Image 1: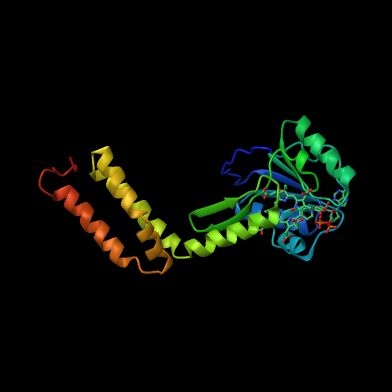
Image 2: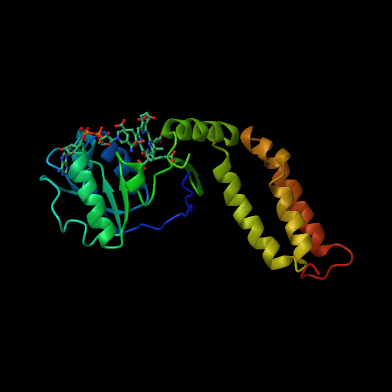
Length: 222
Ligand SMILES: C[C@@]1(CC(=O)O)C2=NC(=C\c3[nH]c(c(CCC(=O)O)c3CC(=O)O)Cc3[nH]c(c(CC(=O)O)c3CCC(=O)O)/C=C3\N/C(=C\2)[C@@H](CCC(=O)O)[C@]3(C)CC(=O)O)/[C@H]1CCC(=O)O
Ligand SMILES: NC(=O)c1ccc[n+]([C@@H]2O[C@H](COP(=O)([O-])OP(=O)(O)OC[C@H]3O[C@@H](n4cnc5c(N)ncnc54)[C@H](O)[C@@H]3O)[C@@H](O)[C@H]2O)c1
């Protein structure tokens, strides 16, 4: 089994070349657009959705077959044509330039695979089965989404602010960690899923005030 290394890559404004304009290319492009990438599509034909993205100025499309040189300025390459020979050639071109490439019909030629994704505000969940079963990745992603729920984003906003306050006000690292861990207890995550974490919020804020102002602490939480 191949063992992939997961990263969250910042592709904003970065040139990503997608060869092919069918259903698979469309799905990969959708993900790239969510990441703000500069997407260039090379394909004789494209789906209606890709043509709409083009009309909106969100992707550039060259309506022709892939040619050597097309990937020269790319940071990432996707070979998603329905022509296995072309896909193999695109993969070879990308690798010879030291670029990462996803070859849709040949996992062994992929230097990266695309996970099933759930995005919700700050949260980005990515699931991969190391190429074994893409459908399993989607289902597992759906289960994670259902288990966490949409309330998570507002909670993460609060968690981010709370963390900054804790880092600023509490000097003792062990105590810091305890306060932060409490914010992500099972009880807290259940409250988030049911949309009722107001009480948790008040309790955590009160606890932090107590920690900073309580007996034995100066205003730096020490
Ligand atoms: C997760 C997702 C992300 C995305 O593409 O955005 C993704 N495939 C998705 C769907 C999907 N793909 C396929 C089906 C039909 C059912 C089936 O065959 O199982 C469905 C289901 C559907 O369409 O609903 C067929 C398929 N996929 C690959 C091959 C080639 C092969 O295996 O030889 C074939 C056979 C082609 C053929 O038969 O010709 C290869 C790959 N597909 C991957 C990712 C990578 C491994 C991910 C992992 O590690 O788990 C990898 C290795 C490379 C890559 O593409 O990155 C996305 C779900 C998105 C979502 O739900 O949000
Ligand atoms: N990795 C995945 O998630 C996944 C899922 C399903 C299928 N596949 C594989 O992905 C490939 C594409 O599937 P699809 O359903 O999008 O196919 P499709 O037939 O819908 O689209 C193929 C596209 O490739 C374009 N094309 C053909 N030759 C080209 C060339 N030389 N240069 C540039 N573009 C070219 C066509 O114009 C068309 O837009 C197939 O090989 C399929 O087996 C991969």
